[in-house]
Image 1 (cartoon, helix red, strand yellow):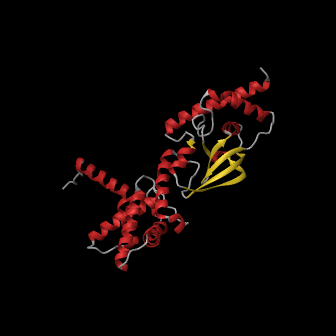
Image 2 (cartoon, one colour; image 1 turned 90 degrees about the vertical axis):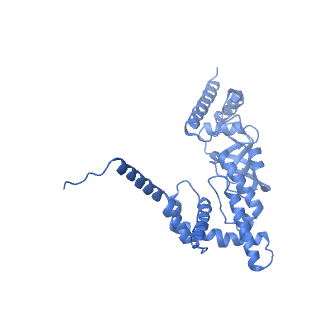
Image 3 (cartoon, rainbow, N blue to C red; image 1 turned 30 degrees about the vertical axis):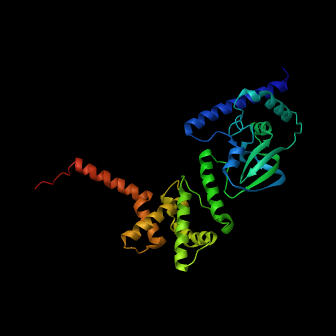
Length: 308
């Protein structure tokens, strides 16, 4: 066996060991370790257009999926089985012998990329410690933000977000918008809020209101005032792992509860936010738990009486 064959075989075996260890780590940490399918991601999102970007230098850790070979490699593009061995080793040989290879071909969606052609070249490049790779890039334009840590669970939320933006056209009406939830179902509530706001606008005006006008008015006069209070008061810190949209959804329910309790008077965003944080924020819940445990302890262990 020649020295180059020995080196490429060892490189492949090392890459396979990495794939095995990554799979074990993913099981323990319950983290994403699968490459994403380009076809599935594209089918779940509303694509507004496509254009060719041409030659680009792309960060390798932003390539998170493949058009057809997503089952052959893991999320770090380490080979998952030996079927790719000889093709992988031939690419690795070209790397060691400094043989130039053509640029890979990628699809770009948001800030992530999918391999159209060149999966083995990406895999070898990552195994050899490269940070970037030359590519011919075609971009598919989507309204939702996509980051390299995208998981299948995240994709389900992005699908809901994409459908919400398609229905409201909010990405066009308010390009600065960024409405993201940490759990499913939130966008359906927002549609209900918008429809309700549209109905009351129509009552006040005495005439039908176009959907686009109602969407923009809801965003400007209902959604953003609550979000601004959340930002100004640092409310998000009291709810780790949650988003501004999560809090908007819950605070609006709480605001309705306060309105009913107060005989129909709207408390406004600031009061609703402060009262919600007081009742359900992390510190409030911790203090409530401590009081509950203290009460249980005192009920079980009577306080000693002082001597007469």
